[in-house]
Image 1: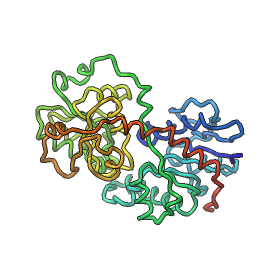
Image 2 (image 1 turned 180 degrees about the vertical axis):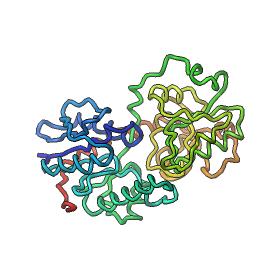
Image 3 (image 1 turned 135 degrees about the vertical axis):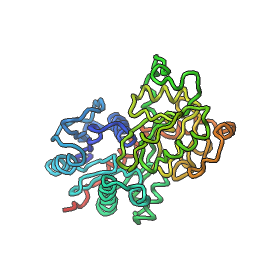
Image 4 (image 1 turned 45 degrees about the vertical axis):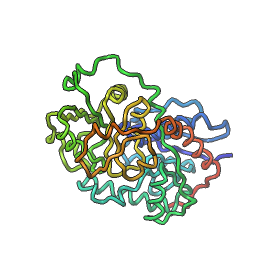
Length: 359
């Protein structure tokens, strides 16, 4: 019989970006695997908004606080009170009661120059603490690429058998319907013109500067960039850098993202560093051409099914790059799915024991 498991549901109270999407989908897949004698609960803040529909995993609302404060006070207290092993899918877990964790990457450690603002540096210290706690106390550590696993072993001397690679996925995109409306009404700059599309935060590792520079050399095309346009990690206000053929469109709906991906000339993803990279998979699933950086884990994930660029080189022609042939994407799309990730996690939860506590 499985011990008491409490899933860290902090992701349900945050905007749905990469790690939050991963957690949401994996929990939904876990729900179909649990047995009647399993005692697994999804513990969420009272202000949660993105809550998966579950049949077998009980949802418990417990405590109201924002951000990591909820994890460190209310979620910690819940796991302590009910003697639970915690499952933490977004790289953060209770400091005083560590559990099973998925660390998506260790960029906070290996790329210190990416974190220049006060907010970023505080987040960097916080995540580095998680990396050390995971090494000492977590019975198993999940990550989403062999690249991230190698870095964890090399940098933190994690035991290889303790780090388990699980796939990310894109299947949530199947539930999203394309918009019927004409997006040229909302974005008149693309009326009658081909455009490139990108989806990311403006964090330094995302290398948004590359898009601005490449756009200057391709005035015949429009470039739309969706995602968070606040400074935060970037320490730079990209809204002040907008040029004639580049538009920062901010947060948009999943339906709008999917529609733009399906209509763009190509989806651009020029990151310096990624633990995985869900957006290119999403774009691939709707048939978009992918122009992607040949850096970090990306060649491992996408193999020869995309068009690679050097993230430091903008002296290129996008038209010439797109003329090169790439392999069919079906193999990649079949390889990565949330169901497999959930099955691997479940198999480890069955045999995991409550670790020695950090207090």
